[in-house]
Image (cartoon, rainbow, N blue to C red; front, side, top):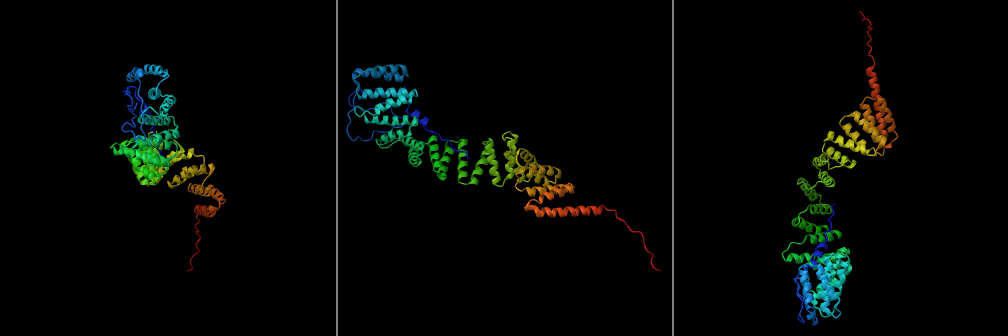
Length: 456
């Protein structure tokens, strides 16, 4: 099987939550103004959930306005060092109100995130998430989601879920990305039953917008089905991957599913198509094609696949490969052509089974001397399936080579094996009879010339 590699959405999350330093910030310079600092790519189309109670939102005071404006300008210019200096200046103030502190921490967290300092980013964002008054619910909810994403990047999936679910409760219509984040976290925790509905919902919402599901999302869904052993449900998902993101590994995944569903006809057609298009080139892939062709009673095609593999240097000169090649040739009735790979396989084998098989092949082609060599080598190596039968075959070959004494000695050895003892005894009688017959034929024929006269 060619399993499906998990395509993580981690990189997508990292891209989504890294605020660009060129982002223009709208700062609340008037009291009570509802704002959000960084609009998450995931939540940007959503409005705040209905509020259970009115929350007073503070504003940035006049004495700090210029500093925040400068920070915003430096962000636009991607001047990280300058932004840090201004933020450090703000941090030294001892009377910052909640909205000012929130902006300070959010700016700092954003810089940490851009520098891939996740621990720092998490520390700053959590400070904002814990503020209870003075900032808008929309801002705070967005930070909850951002904290969940950073925790996900740190592979702290259980805690990431806790923050994501807190955020989820504040939304009337969570985005597709949000469902996928929760689904991915459950998947990483091996909670596949909980992961499945979230991932399904995320993909559904994306499709409802007329968009093609993201590659990583479809991969995640297919992996969940695989973990649950639901290969029939997995099949259409992988077909979507083949359709929208045509790659060889997705075709191989289809083959894996067909194999699990025991649909060898579909698997064979798929692999043969890939082979004919030149997509399959590795030793294992070509071995799979040859094996499938053998299962479809098409040994000729199997032998051609292996022959090309050997000629192209793809197949290693191993016992397994030589044996498979010879078996394909033999099944295709190309007996003489099968001798070379079978002989190579026999040389590499530590037991005598393949030498025995080689000997039988030589017998079928009436190559008695080669057959004797192979069968004798088989008996010397041992570990045969039926030593007695191999001994009988050797005796037969020796008889055909007109070596009756050697044949009789071999058949007498075969008498030790109960399964062939009767056959060995019959052969002994037959060989002795033939020796006797030959001896009789060689005797000089004496014609009696003494004729008594006829009576008159």
